[in-house]
Structures are given as structure tokens and as C-alpha cells.
Image (cartoon, rainbow, N blue to C red; front, side, top):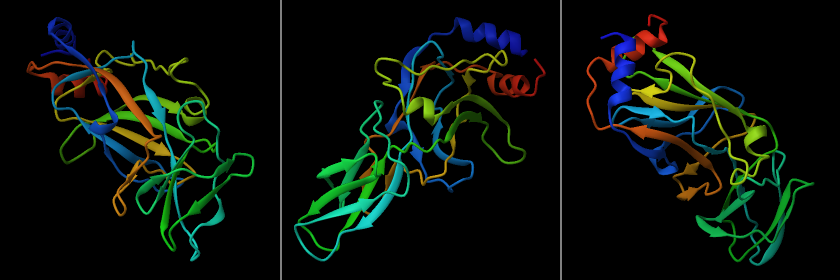
Length: 242
């Protein structure tokens, strides 16, 4: 079936609007300074990415520190990257051996925070929004071995996402490079690729901490109908054969 006929078929099926939420993604860490896949979503049914709805994005840095051997001692911890007082989300999230805690104070100009732990020798996990710029790209990727078939969806620099109050001034993107640019077949992946000068993490398993200040959601419309020929049509669309 031709790309044009598939596009017409897609316009006539019923869709359920929704969002690819934070809990829908499988997360991984990056290699600092290199393009790295840090989040993956596999489409359970055919879906279309909706460019007429806003999306949320905040990509935190993750660092760990050890508290000293004296209980109830206030310490100052120096972050490795520039800390941003962001309007998009909570600037800094802190855990003490896996327990959520609050810093005593945050010095944005000095890129430090103070914290008094009742414990000794425990590990602090810090997720914070850095001022350091990073690039973020979302792309769709076909499953299977052999040559990789993929297509970029959209890009968003963190300097734009992290400096904006997204509840009042939402982020947006444009799709339309090809006829089926917004279409993701069943079992294809949407990947979030980051190139950042800082260590990116949305969670870590050793102490079970989560970057609750991270934002990653994409609007979608999903159909439960099976569309014969969709995967081949999307591949042809990516190859420019439509």
C-alpha cells in the first residue's frame, strides 16, 4: 500500500489522545560529552506524535557525595556544574542514603548547597538542573537487526527548556518533514538522545533514588486498530520513496 493511501487510512481511524509520561520510559545514563540514548519508549500500538499540544522537558545532572563522620555537622557541597535557579521545575533534589531530604540552603551563584545530616558516612544523591547547555533530540527507530532505520522527530536545547516556566510558556515543536513524519508504528521505539557536558540520570538503582525534578512527556494520539502495510509505508517515507 502506498504512503499516500496509508496516510488517508490514518486519517480515518479512531484515536485516543494521551501522553507518553515519565513512567512510560525506560531510562539509562549517558556518556558525558557524547550523544547518548537516555530514554526509550516502545509503541504498544500505532500512534501519532501531536505537535498541536505542548510537551515538558527538563534534563537533570546527577552527582553523589559522602557525608563526613560527624553526625549533625553542617557541610557545604560543591557541585561540578553550574546550578540554575530554573522556573521549569525544582532546581535541586536531594537524598540521604535513599531518603528524600531538604538542603539547609542553596547558593546558586557559588554552585553549592549546605546540608546537615543526622547520619555519618552516608551517600547523598543530588539531581539538579544545570546551566550548562545540552542538546536533546527525539527520534523514531525501527526494531530488528541489520541496518538501522530511524528518523529524527524534533530537537530542543536545554537552554530553552530550563529557562522557561513551562506551565505558563509551554514548549512546542514542529513535525512535517515527510508525510508520515509524526507516525510511529507498533513496536517501534521513540528514543531521547542527549549530548551533555554533565552526567545525566533520571534514576539510580543502588539506593533507589529518582530525579523527581526531571520532566519528559510527549503528547500522542494512539489507535487500537491494526493498519496493514504501515511499517513498510513509514520505512518508505523515511527513505523518501513516498
